[in-house]
Length: 104
Image (cartoon, rainbow, N blue to C red; front, side):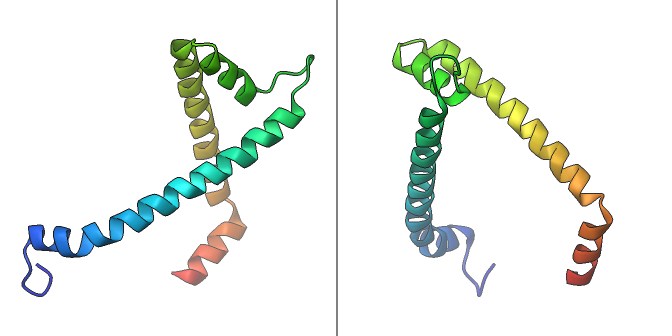
């Protein structure tokens, strides 16, 4: 309990007013970031070079939503794995350990 307030009161009076601005800002951030990334991918694309993001967009645009979804899931799995590995290996370096030891 926070100052005698129950769970429902905390949710309605504290969490609910904080959620809409956070969700709107998160949506805008992702929206702007996706336009930036998509424009870069479009510039890199040529007839000889197909960028994966543009290929995914074409699949979605032509109505192959099943293949587009499968490719998107595959991209998420691969990028998530690579990100996890990168985080694991950067945590094991001595420079990162020194910084984290000093901060906490």
